[in-house]
Length: 111
Image (cartoon, rainbow, N blue to C red; front, side, top):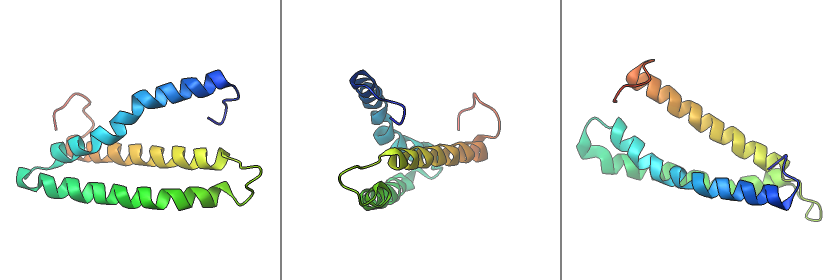
């Protein structure tokens, strides 16, 4: 969104985000289930995971407001987009490291 300056660009980003956003909701329980060896603890792990996610979502609104700034007449959204991208990249790196810990460097392996 930082480079988007037209209505067509906004619509394109919205459509692409709409297709991809379902993964952010559906993927965590699958990851918890796959990474849990003792299957009797899956419910506990999913609950704890979504609790951590809820804490992040709770802090996201005020944090974004702080980054956005206090100038209500001319808000600059660049910082909020950068913050979101950095957090998404950090989460992807952590998931990649966890996968490497579980399966090693092999790409096509069932965990």
